[in-house]
Image (cartoon, rainbow, N blue to C red):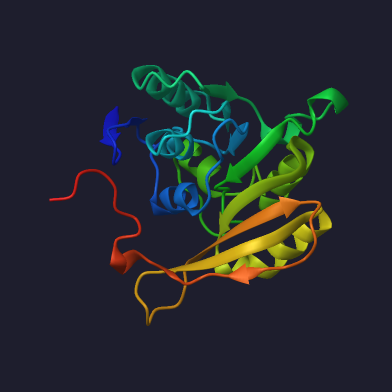
Length: 227
């Protein structure tokens, strides 16, 4: 097991197949729940998104939803180590989460760093394959979960590869999750984007703002004490 330390000292527990990447850090920073809002971190893995929110001062009730039991246990362990009792690690399939009437619309904010790949070779490690390929969860599944779980006016943030953008924006609109903010992630100003981040709001009118590019070369993905 490994330990990563975030900017303000929050400890993140990791393990092979249950680590985190640049995309999760960028997602967690792109938009955050307001204090006292009830948040849902879908495909939470080791809990990096929830823990970044905690590291920046968020203390509202937060559900970290993850299918992989070992990754979910790491999130629970990190929440305990950081005295972050407001983070609840829930090991469950988002496709069956909040499907009954009384459970729906409970959340104010949701985020998801979903599996990206629908084709190509899979990792021989089943945990890594599940995290990266869409056999256990598609972006459409995540969007449908956000539709069910968010109250009217609730916000949803998502990251995906640029080649999937047209389908993602269309699926968000079809689920009454209106895209409001969009940003591309680039390694450098003259490079093509390799990721986009979008924030949508449930049941609101159209109006999308495209924000300045997020540049990795400018330090957008750095964390922890800098020398």
